[in-house]
Image (tube, rainbow, N blue to C red; front, side):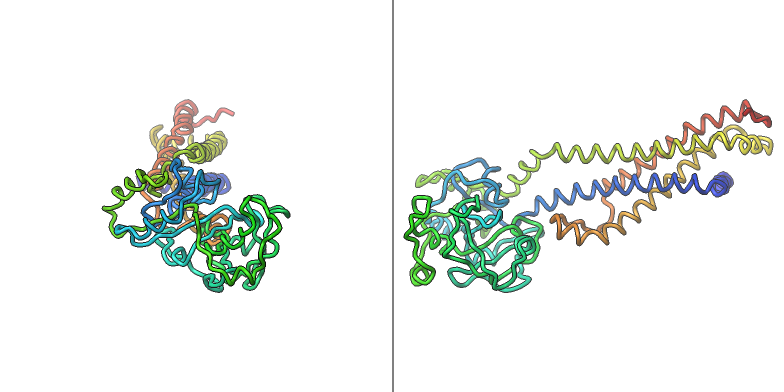
Length: 419
């Protein structure tokens, strides 16, 4: 075996260009295979970690995916609001440790505006139970102060002290803007890779204040000024949803059932993890498409290596004939070609894996900041190792085709090469 390996190495050295091209072909295939797989799994992980540490999300009676979309991803609108008294009742429930109220409905230049309170910054978690952090500034403390997400600040170029105008509803058009009530940016949140980055946060009281005079859904022309509103006390009448953290996980299903059967108004309580899993399942077509792309990339790479080996085989007929003359049997020639294909595949896998980790190390911060996908530079998973094992097996099997041709040629050629 060692003699055959040494012979394969010397043979490859005599065909450096062909061998290097074969290795690069396999390496690029491995980079794309593992890269797509890593992006697929990390995207799924980032998706699942959009919210963590929250036991229940409560909103108006609705399907759990719709409730998840508007409360967590800020997509779509609620079917109905929650009465403030209902929020107070459940936030003070003996099973509840903390509650985060959420009020949606307004926007700013394509970004959703969310009304909330101090509990949001204290208890909201994402990823591996990571809390929200500020890159600049602090929480809102006054009525017309706002905290913006990282993407809002980056795209619109806002800094601490910038003033923004909130629009009534999702469409940010001139007639729907609260022009006389500008908000001052007092805080910018650190990037999270979640919808938090694309959200403008204000207080619940501010949501009530800016809608004074808009009770009919339009500005009736009697909206008070900022100074007048600041002198008044505002308490929400309704909110869009609430997030609950419980004292014990055991109480989750009991409280969920109690909320779902609440008689004072129709409510729905969902488990975020279950709803996220259902939502990801609806997007499984994209996941399967990524896996199919990965498979075709590997097939293309291996076929490229096969083409290279078959092309060089005609040029090596004299080499095979000389080996036969020196005592090598057809099976030795057969083993030589298989070992060569297997070795090139193995070296390509090593080069591709190393290159992938190098690319991840360089590109991970950019991908995290731009797309919100956290590509962790971690060791290969068992699934990824099994994929590489399949590539190695396929590369070895590919070697059988030129090996069989060399076997037949070495039997028929002897020392006379037929051109």
